[in-house]
Image (cartoon, rainbow, N blue to C red; front, side):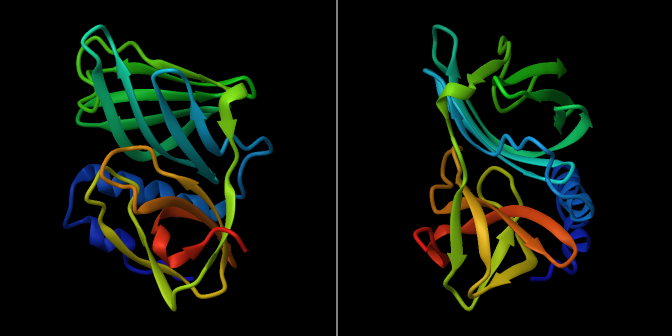
Length: 204
């Protein structure tokens, strides 16, 4: 697996994409935390997929809130602040993703998140409704990683090859059902991103 040139690519795109790539690059240095919240967490209004690689928390989130059923829909990479608290920054807003063994909680920190809109006060998902990651193996000759972001995601230069074993989590945000969140451990540590599910076998 290789990931050369990804950070250079981001210079031609938005700051949000660059932040996600930088967080993924930092993930090479460390293994996941002792307690790993990766998986799909759900409640009565929606769900969030999480995948940790080092200090980076890749996530895919969709939910509804309020009497008018406003939709939250987003994917991205949040950076570790301290002890189970991750921050995701987008368009001048910041949200916190707080993970414990009992729940995953989302709460606004500053600004109005564009992916939800005004009056969103946060969300919470209990551990009793968590599904753990699946194992998968790459079946394509080469499967490239994509940046964890709302559709359409940007392709990176990093890839995995046939026979590589991964951990995967289904995405939850809209127009991305052909992708999964994937985590691969290479010689230099962990890396996470989005992969096309058609390039993987989930049953091996």
